[in-house]
Image 1 (cartoon, rainbow, N blue to C red):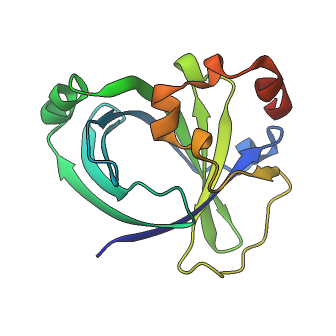
Image 2: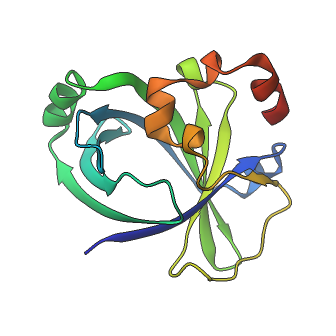
Length: 164
């Protein structure tokens, strides 16, 4: 059984950029699913694709199952999506023995930058980089599925300004 334990944070400034060791362009879409399940199709750098099933909760810990699929299949599945395609560039940043991922969103979610860290257990200690802002773990509107339905550009101006 796959288990994802992930924390999400807003990002402050650009200091993290000089620490980035990897860069991946991601397109992803969400397929119609039952209320308790999220089904995502993702294409990385236009040549690698996955189908992911996750429990729908937006908590610290969720079930997650991910399977590689042919890129052509992923492109076809994206045509069956609900909501918009999420577009982002993901940067990987090693930090004190752990790997952070910083997502810079584009398209209708331009202006949103989120850092994520996957942990081995819910109480795992980690050293926070200075560029971390407010923690948004468990806030549904910051999750990609929600951003496909209600993109960042549609948020109230005050909510967007608080992040920038």
